[in-house]
Image (cartoon, rainbow, N blue to C red; front, side, top):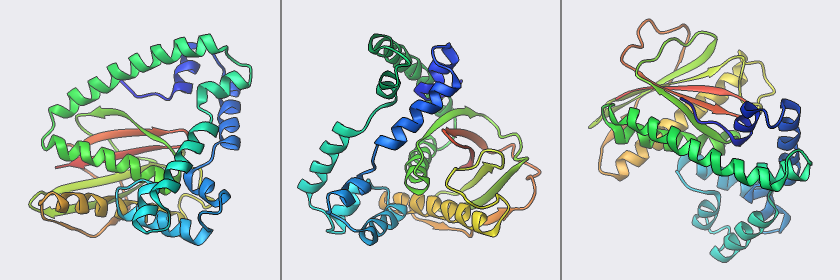
Length: 272
């Protein structure tokens, strides 16, 4: 049971091939702009201000526009203007397929309806699985924060793929472990598959630069969890993040959450 992207869904049904999928994705990348890029084009922000907003996003679970307003770099009306413009100019995947001439609008609309129904069924399955885990709300909050932070950190969309009762192994991966202690104790392991790493990286997966970037993401993720829990009156402390040099001998107590993006696969192993 997994959560698919619309393109993967169409590919699996045989309505498009891999070349058409990649062509439509490239078309989106060429035409779609982030809110920060739009703000730069409109001369609302400079590059230094955009970096400052993104730094705040790494520390707090907030959208780009909300962070910009909090830092008083954009007004509410400016953010609304940018969101409205982004909605008008950005192209969804289905529209990219139509513009490239791969599928008709009627076929796309019918498939979107079927796809959304399929996704609702899959999400219900995942929620049912999570409901049998201890500290369900903490796991769900962890997933939400992880997805939001991943997009802001690596500029890639991410979806929960599936839930398994127990993790298997972390072979062929680069992995980090970090814990929370206090009112609630939780251990987290984030594992990036070496063969499918975020496309941002210009470094070898084993290089110190790449490891430092993944470690920073792990630390930011756990810090955001701690801030969220503290805001709810749950006092927790953040333990030191460590690189796992070899496959852990026992993961039987960890629930395994699989994530998939357009460019990489990640495991989030959690024990709460």
